[in-house]
Structures are given as structure tokens and as C-alpha cells.
Image (cartoon, rainbow, N blue to C red; front, side, top):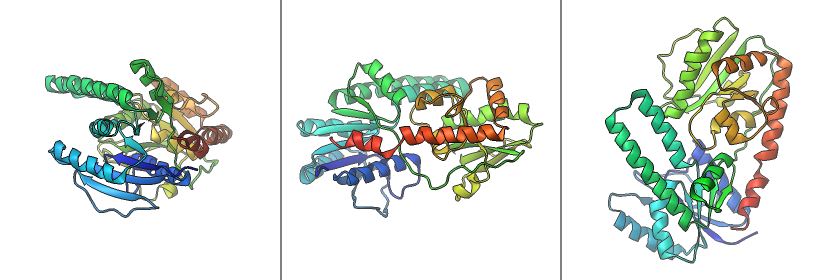
Length: 366
């Protein structure tokens, strides 16, 4: 147990906990508290709101303005007053603040939590958007932003004592790009009360967690389902359910249900049989796959998702890339016994690789 004081900077509202990025921060705070750390959270963002704070966390809100010099002075004075042992920064976008902290407190430990490798993630998202509906203005913005992100990542590698990545894929790529030995794997963690219930039903219900379809990565998965899978499976007793905010309603097919956002997700998932994650771009955790596998759902994933998780095809989940492979894997899961087998494999894999003790071991000696 430690009694160190850790000061966490987050460029977003953490409480109440709703989205996956909030969950990642919240559960890590709970683990810090269990390990004996004193935790102070600074939310540095525009449009501050009142929040109900859970657990023994001191939350300080600092309004982000257009005058960074004034913001910086306020933050530095606050840090001098709090005098933490450790500075912890969520997201690369905290780099500007981290730079000032590093300069003002050169002997203090600085850690970063990377929710994805921003340069690689942005590169793939931007290319997807450019090819989809690009113009010269978008291309110019892309190059400017991409090189700005790379510059920030280089600086992060320089000033940090350690950088915790949400996936091994991101960690390995960062080490290769920046020749850094500071990268460490720190998995996402969340517990779920609901677990998959096997149903010997000839009518299969398949769902895709889209989270928010304003995000081009999530939308790419829906487009793949609609254009490549639904037409080929329209004669089968299979229905696709699309979950997520801002779900497009103009996609029409008899075997498609654009369900959108669900309040009571557990009741809805109790009717589902298979999860699919056909996303082929973007870095980070792929929380949509985590949520399915952690609950024990028989799951089919793209090669990119497979690279993030590092499990075994046909044992922990199924891997597909080309449309015909997806069709074949979906048809395999019509076998109820195979669904049971894959569910058991998923549950064991997640229990072994995404458990709270792995995270505690990584954080106990900061």
C-alpha cells in the first residue's frame, strides 16, 4: 500500500460515468484508491458542469479558456498548493498542460494514459474520410493535424516517466515509431453484471455495438454490414441489430433493425445470440469488442480487432476480413454447440487477460 498523492488531469467530464472513456478513468481511480493513493482529479475543459462525484475523490474544475497563459498560471498555482507526488495525464490532448507541469516541477513523476495511439488513429480515420468525401481543404487540414499530433507524441515520449497504452498493438507501434522504452500496456477494465445466455434458437439475433455513429470508425462498421453482409444473408433466419447513438435510420432492410441507443442494455442483450465487430480502421481498445467478449458472447471480429486483443481464432472468438469470410463465420455460429464452446473460450480469455490484478500490478509502484 502507498500513501502517495496522485493528481489526474482529464480533458473531459468524468462524472457521472456513462461512456467507455469515462469508465476507463473511473475504474482506474477506484483502483488507485484501493492501492492507497490519495486522488485528486482536475477536469480541464470548456463548458464546466456541476457533477455528482462518486467515491472519495476530490474533483477540481478548471475552465478552459482562449487565454492559455492565464489558464496555465491558475493550474501551476493550484499544483503548488496541492503538491502531489505524481502527475497523471489522460489523453494526448493534455500535452500542453503536461509541458508546463514538467517545466515547473522537474523532479515530479509524470505519467500519461493513452486511450489510443493518436497519430495512427487519426491517420486512418482521416484517410477514410478523404476517400469517402474528401476535398483539398480536408487534405490540407489532415496533413497539418497529423504532423501536429506526431510532434506532441514525440514530446510526450520525452517528458514522461512512463506511458500507459490501452492495447499492446498501440504500445508496440509507439515503441517502433519513437524508439521509446517508456511504453507499458495497461488494459481497459470494467465489470458487467449481465453475461451471455445461450439459447437454442434457430432464429439468430446478431448485434453490433456502434457507440456513436457520428464517429467515422463506427460508421464504417455499419456500412460494411449493410453493403456486404445483409444482402447475402437476407434468406437466412438472421437479423442484425445496430446499437449506438445517432444511428442512421435511412438504412432499410427486412433483416436489419437500426435500434439506436438502448437505456436497458442488459434486457436487450438477453435476446441476442452473436456479436460482430467488423471495424477495420482505428486504434485503441475497441471497447465494443471488450463489452461483448467480457459478457461471454460468441463474437466475430475483424483482423484489426484481433490484433488489439491477441486471442486465438476459433478458440476465443472468430476472425474474418473479407465479406465471404464473414458470411462463412456467421453460418458456423448457427450451430448452438459451437456458440456454447466459443462463449466459454471468450469468458476464460477475458478473465485471464483483462482482470483487475493485472492493472493493480502495473499501478502499485508508481
